[in-house]
Length: 174
Image 1 (cartoon, rainbow, N blue to C red):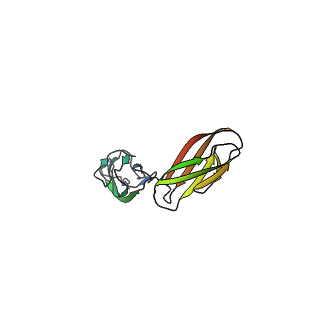
Image 2 (tube, rainbow, N blue to C red; image 1 turned 180 degrees about the vertical axis):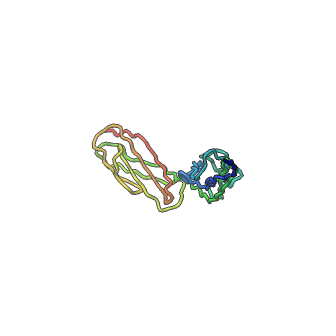
Image 3 (cartoon, rainbow, N blue to C red; image 1 turned 90 degrees about the vertical axis):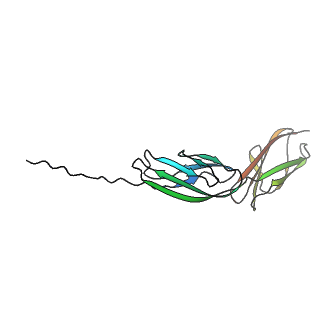
């Protein structure tokens, strides 16, 4: 009977860095790690604007809108590392204001939206009265059947999917 020791190396999977973002609208971006084989891994993010993070799923605020070369380096417990670099473009939200006249029951009320911070056209519009869609144009006419308080909502979305929502409660008189 003889005993022999043979060194055996058990290979492990090397991490593969990958990430995505929740939304590219606005300056505050939620980054989501999508890397594989990362049990016990360390993360190093470089957002391309001089800022970095070691969090797995960081939220980062860019000071200006634009395109940033963002990298993620994932290092596992065996000191194996992987890096991915993606260009991230941040877009502003469109902004609008609404005007209403007149405010009497059984009279045609006219709503007008003005885009105060234009982004990338074309735009999609929605007007809702108490949650019910009434128009998909930048302006809207609606006759309130009864006096009372109504919630008026205007939504605008640009071609990047960035959206602004305005809510106001109006009082309709006799």
